[in-house]
Image 1: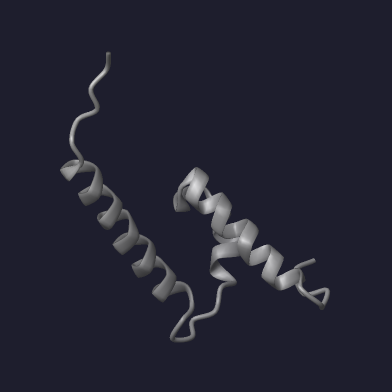
Image 2 (image 1 turned 90 degrees about the horizontal axis):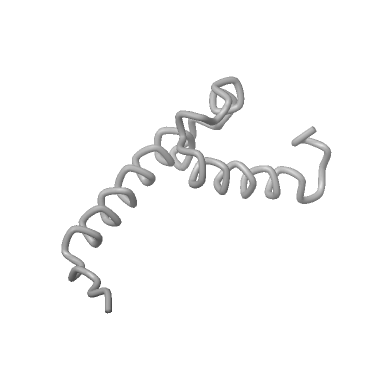
Length: 70
């Protein structure tokens, strides 16, 4: 139902991004991931972007000062 026209493809992309961020990419249906484009900004680009964002977050967390509980 993603290709119904209008903004359905955009809404589906946003829903997939949120699901992947919350659940982890490994929990996304492989059939749907396989349907992603292989263009320069397609599936492989998105995987590399996600890896880079994860590494940035992990680095920020490791360099953040420990929270002090009172």
